[in-house]
Image 1 (spheres, rainbow, N blue to C red):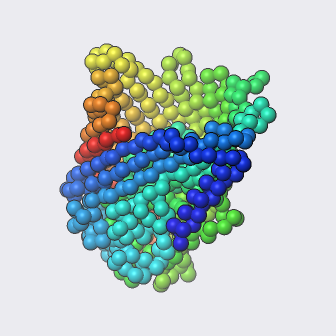
Image 2: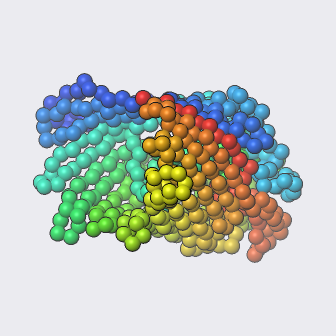
Image 3: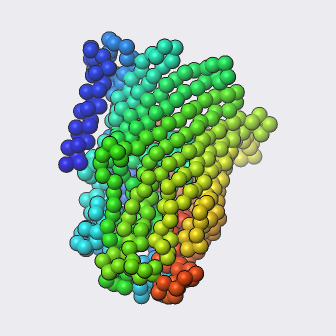
Length: 537
């Protein structure tokens, strides 16, 4: 049924394109490009962790019109993925994957975790009918889904499919994009501040893949009013987005997948005391006009500065777990938590500025959200306001001593998060910062590019170090060799039996404290050697 609905929407998008003019003729000159890629990753003490084969094709097809609309094009991105790791390393990943106990990566001795929490059930819809029913369509992928993730009920092999069109509105221009697409707000790497218009598929490689590849495209309408220069600004435009697609949360990975960010997939498919499911039900927003999402952006240029003011009304993309017990510390017999995705209001903005004194571009993004819900040990959850920001700097540096006259790229970012209504039993820290550093060189006319990426989570005391080198022998082939090493992360947490029994003012650090490790700390046993080979056409 979902596939039929998407097919219908594709036809609707084409019908709208036909409606922009009484006379519409599809031109013959269709432009194609794309690539084929193999990504083979080897994880320390695990063996093969990825054997992902991807073919992606992109096309642009101009459309001739005789009315007021012009520059009309039909655009699409198609992607097919097969990850052979589930066939080649089935002992570690897939429906037969095993773990000694939940959180074994950072509980070497098991402790109370091994006694009170069962190991997560891998691919629960193939191994546990009750858990499959409780997850209710969320984080319940089966073997076919993890092997070929693009070929699912949502037809994700259609990465993008949209119509672009432009018309004049007085002295201004109106550009419209209708269809399945990504809408990009913000310019950060690894972590997002403003860029929340699309959910993200972290199951492809946690936070380490390019956002372009892991955003989940949505069926949306995007309209930009391009107003150009005026007496104050060098450029100015307004943007409206309307997401009329069925809500989809971030994909955190199903237990048994090679990448399940924050261990959430295994936590949600586990039992307390061997008998009580952690998750009772998942409350996904129904498809309706009332549950659509939308936002506005005002963007402009003033001298050397580019700015934006952003407002978005959307559903929280990370799950909010609601305690179901009759009393704090005493869960209901048929499940500990329900999962919700509450409405969130976001107000934020960005500023990019080129500073001649430092010969660098400085970037600032900030977002203030209302309505987000964070987990608590004793009361299940709490609605709170959260402030997030990033300060970044991009600079080109020439270092002749390193053997090239080409400039090196130095990029640094500091992400901050402040929970305004913080409680002591929240796994999220009241204040936290994550820093990233990217240093990239260019040799042999930019065909040989060494790179170093470092990310550090202050509160988790966790660091990821990812050196790599890419080589492009011609216009078609690209080879990339990389390491991805994780260090630190608070590997052990208390289990407070007093808190479990409901005694007030006693922190219960498990099971929710595992989330305080953050995506870097939780991945502390995922050191990898990575080889990627791509052929582009």
